[in-house]
Image 1 (cartoon, rainbow, N blue to C red):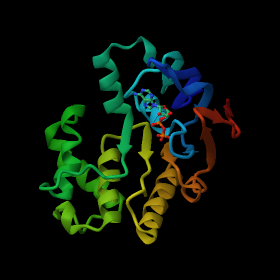
Image 2 (cartoon, rainbow, N blue to C red):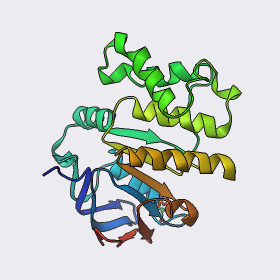
Image 3 (cartoon, protein in one colour):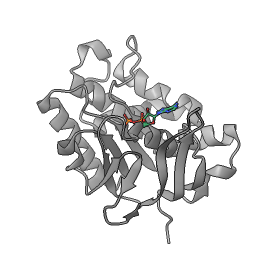
Length: 229
Ligand code: ADP
């Protein structure tokens, strides 16, 4: 049986302080392959802390986190970085595109540190941009693209390394309603294609677009089916 893409066993994080802050209280969570899960909570509820743990940017202070069946607690820093690069595609609220590089270059550069042979990169970058409906805008620099198009470039960049998980932090936070809707439709399409997606948001309307929503409040992740808090 395939292991969950994300499996938390009693995972929690307390910032040492002083005073110590229990920003993410120990919980169990499983996100299975092909799920589209949203994590919703207000400001200060622990969303960034959760994102940092799930994205291997920070280590939990309790429990065990298995990513794609791999126990991340036993890894050295370089191994964690490599695992993050290979298994997780990040999408951020503010796109984080290189401003003077074309869409194609932005997507291609994501493969440089991922061991994708140089000769394969242009084809893969084009395929990823086609996939997000930007095949006709590959040579454009970000300032010539709408917010929604920029976020679709960022999604293409996240997908081009063929991650196990697409991890999105407020992916529509900088977008107007029409562009936000286009990006959410894109995520739904990727989900329909079998991608595992985790979206972190403060916006209940965005959270409703996932196939399962988990709530976080005062550092406590709480249930939805499959999640035990
Ligand atoms: P959100 O992303 O939902 O706004 P955070 O995860 O940033 O919430 O914060 C959760 C709690 O942890 C808050 O009470 C915040 O003040 C606290 N916190 C965040 N980062 C740190 C840190 N580095 N040290 C101490 N407390 C922190």
